Length: 124
Image 1 (cartoon, rainbow, N blue to C red):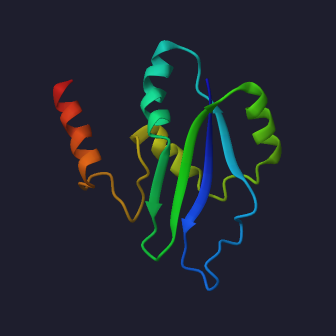
Image 2: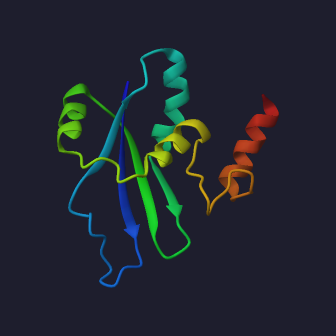
């Protein structure tokens, strides 16, 4: 299974209201395996499809997640401009199920999604 992560900055606090990198595509494609275990882990992440992170200064990053085929993965890998130093967001989505960082700590309640996640863990 090939998973594409695409970075965007939908909200920013720049002088002209634009992100200087908005005309480029920032994509990472990962091969996460084809096992049933991999599918079970990645299905909820793909179904959610969109993750946001607010930096606290008016800027907000978003990462879109989707499954892609081999031809699309090859094309995305050719045209990408990297991930602009935000690979830690991909790691956070992979290992924590959401984007956590200095302005959004994992150990702090963040609303109904975290409440549902906590309820699921109690039922395990």
